[in-house]
Length: 187
Image (tube, rainbow, N blue to C red; front, side, top):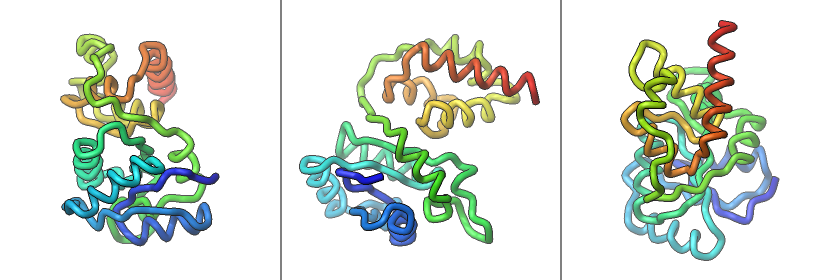
């Protein structure tokens, strides 16, 4: 895989992991969740010239970074790494640097572009009826939905907005829910 875009990551260990996987690759490192104005300006410039792909850790700070970048640079492209793919094999926290080459290839082969003010397509009542909001298994079902649709995990309050922002169609949503229901039936 080669990339025209510059990949935005959290730190140098992420850049190292991407370079080990893909060879020389251009990245911008945020150096944590408190992104300074100079880094945001660099991301804006990169978006205007080559485009950027945001690939952060699948945790709260990673989501904070995504939101900060999305507010400052609307329309960026995102790649989401599932939580299970970012677990360290030793002590430490979740991170892109722990992902296998196969997991990184998978995440970067399913890019999604955020549309900030996209209209809601999937009603909240449907999300509730499908067990994605409320209920004992809702968190697990949302995690799996995020993996299947390549939009990352989100809480129940933000699910409807995330589905709209990444323009998830009714048919893609229905297919993912059908898969989750089949998995749950066989569990």
